[in-house]
Image (tube, rainbow, N blue to C red; front, side, top):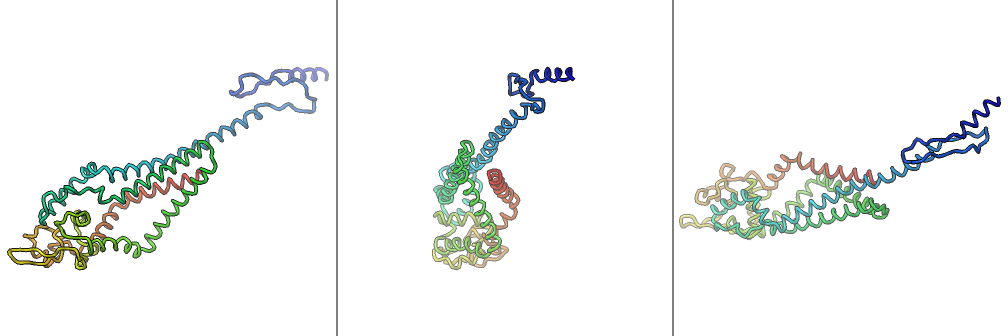
Length: 319
């Protein structure tokens, strides 16, 4: 019995080595316990708080990566808006082919050869471009708010970031629901300004003002006439309908660009008696644009779904 007790005391007096790479030295545990009290390893005592600290350090890094996405979207909107609004030369070079087709149609309709020389898309879509810049600045600042809140562990900034993110997602979902649930009201919301532009501001196929050029541009590119049909021009009060052919004065029923061959000399029948054979009478521009969106809906839906998915993922991670 004495031999067993001596052996037990010798074992307890040895050095207890901690199996942790973070501890450079051994920890000596002296024999100051009674035989009834077991000796516990210091490995579990040391490692648990360190593992907890590592997890706490990794959480803001993951959140920080997600909040950078919002900043990148903000920069993208800023660049697109700035290029469209103030980079007219670059945009005009991208749209050179479309301008050439429209210029040919306008010259055949009687416009001057330099009808598009003073037309800049940035001036025409100025408000939309400014909206892109404002939206981009908002998303950029929102991304900074989330990054700073995650890096510096500022709770109020993260709370604001989550609130804004929730509001954005709800607004997007509300817009989608309204588009499908109240289709007629949404169509009216888009169509009314277009009809008003044709009724009050459209002048002719040869006119060089921005509204007339834009309407002619859409009709030339999408092979359409009017908002719903060519009859939209019956209500136009600013459109110059009269033209002279072989010494005789006539009144047009449709603009020259609505004809499949926009030359007035070759399309007297088109201007006076438009049909589906000589004009785009059966295709409204609103429907033509809808068809174009429908043909490219996979791309548009993919981009929109990706944006919404990223926003939801960021919200889930932060919350």
